[in-house]
Image: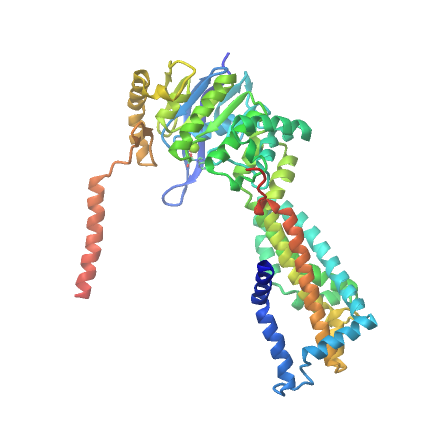
Length: 260
Length: 302
Ligand SMILES: Nc1ncnc2c1ncn2[C@@H]1O[C@H](COP(=O)(O)OP(=O)(O)O)[C@@H](O)[C@H]1O
Ligand SMILES: [Mg+2]
């Protein structure tokens, strides 16, 4: 009983900001502080959400967005990890490429979008590429760093036991760099969602970003907010999934103690 | 035939000198040492004299610039299954459990999981860590970590064990316990051990022979035969023979420590660390420098 009560007060403490925000959001248009044409109250947004769910539109746009996000991420993760491991391992290469990477990283994916459209058209390819570009850099740079910062004592220890290069790479460097790689992947995940929206707002006919922009253009404001909420939920979902994967790979950090 | 035969070893490193210019630092020069099969040999020397550098060469982690090292009559190769190293910094793999850490050398040798585990558990028991098999390194104390590292080396049965100041980072109590454990383990199967230390007491307690090194550039100054009886126990520290050897070792190393003092710290004798002698003339000079500055400052304020 005590535990249950603690649980509720605990969750209350964590969500109190959110609850207050929703209350204020509901109140503002109703009390006439803000023009309700521009700011739909949450109650209206929820009914819009339900209507969109019933019609199947929300799921359709969500799935398309999710697919784009996952494809872009998958390419960025494989590319970023493979090159990152390679570049980090051969420290010399890293020196040659560092300045180039640092400038590329600073180049906003949004600024480059027109270039991608010029080169690859307005179709799916340029959408995937913008997502890829945005999520690639944190993954690549964190992987390089992770490999570079592997404790040399561990490598020496493995070498002194007669380990092969392959063993050292797969069983020492890779696991030692894994925490950094995951930090990069999670950062890449949030960049991915951001760039996804931008990609879907230019020359798209589907996806949550399109739904938001289209609803705004057709003055269907509750739908617009419903799309925004849907997007937020998707972002949270991706972040949560990445956290779960990360946790399963780094359980040793929590350290399960068995047998005293 | 000697197990290890190092002759005329020369090693220098490129370093930045005080002015940031690249210069060569000669760490080992004309270093000669022979280690017999099955003996416990300690290398005793002041900090920075090149002890680790030499051990790394034996382990295949570094290469000399001149001279040659033979192990079993063959040149040292960088990949070999018959050497095992215990580092001062433990070098445990943080993502592996204690058991998996002990298994790693066996995994490198291609043993099946079941065989690995059986062997690893045996050596974990030997160092008294059976109950901690499923812990991760960060959950262990320094002494326990070093026990894991020792079990790891024992588990894959190297011909030669190389130990680089393995107990230097531990507190006195733990260190003594581990020294006695090491004696017990070594006396049981007498593998060749090359043990590095900067503690005279530790060297004498453990070894058959102690190679005393000079300050940098390091070479072997003299080898002391430690003819104390075995099996050895704690009490041997209080014997008069022990005191005599300690006295003699100290007389050998004293000058080297003084020479090395300008560079780094020192050697331990039985009373603990010998601190760097304060250089009074320098201290006076620094005082004057500061005084001058403060004096000048005060004038300005005034
Ligand atoms: N890779 C390296 N590059 C430059 N200098 C080194 C390197 N390794 C060791 N040294 C220098 O060589 C000297 C001897 O080092 P080391 O063998 O570690 O001494 P110790 O006897 O304390 O183990 C030290 O002055 C150290 O700074
Ligand atoms: Mg050293």
